[in-house]
Length: 409
Image (cartoon, one colour):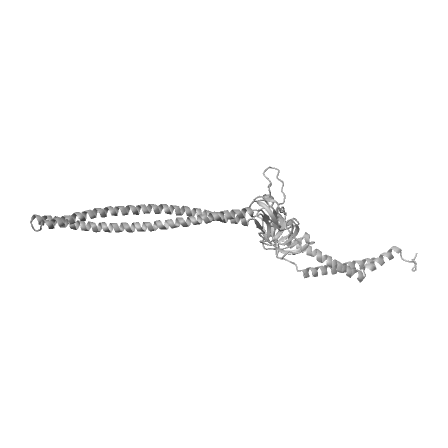
């Protein structure tokens, strides 16, 4: 039986053909290809990054936290900062009542002045004793010279007296001349004895002067020590007085402020902390991610507190050991119940560009660093070309499949 040419086609076949015609329309295929190219560009970017980068979400902002504590005891007279306030180096933070320390400085200065006068007196006495030694030595030398002269004169008169004796026996000289020679000899011998005694006395005076000078020098040494001690006491008192004003040691923000006016502070009591503006990243990478990681490699750091904004950085150093090894209670693996756990190693990453000044970025904030561990890098325009080629190929293939299905129907 022949088919009726006027008989309508089955509804299902007609509907499928209509849908295929819509899908095969350039108004659908090429916009879809553009969307696919964009998706491929993003996906290929992630794929290439996964091949050349190592990333972790176990990473945090780190920084130095400077604890501020007084060096002396005392009552707080003024507090010049507030919580989270930005301060500069050498800004005045807290003042302690200086009254007691000012009085101590005055006392030490008075004691030092008294000691200074005492030192001057002792130095004058020492100088006098040195002059006395010099005078005694000069007198001793003069006495020795006089003794030597007396000895020579006594020797000469003794010789003349002996000669006079011989001449008197020969009746060459008179008795008067002999008596004169004898008197001269007796006088010279007496003068010699007197000169010897005087030399001995002057020598003993030299020894006495040296003894007195030694005692004076000992007093000078003691006075110097006492004077230096007095000066040290003044310097210590002035230093303690300067400690009544506590200044910021660096730039940063005030945190954990625990001091108010009227508080009595003890030495070493932490009253506040300063977080410097210089921060870095400590990223805890798995040990399996460290194969190609080296200091100096470039990185991008995504900061959660800034809505995922990324900043350029670089790897500074890799810790020599896992984080668990330096924890308060390191794991003890020699118990016989060992289970291998992939360890994480802290990696220090330093920012290469300044962080925004209008946001507070402090220690503990979460970040996601991505470190480029391979020099191989696919440029964005190459990724875009590949994505476009794949999207065009997909569109052509899709169109080919639709045409084949259409002919089949």
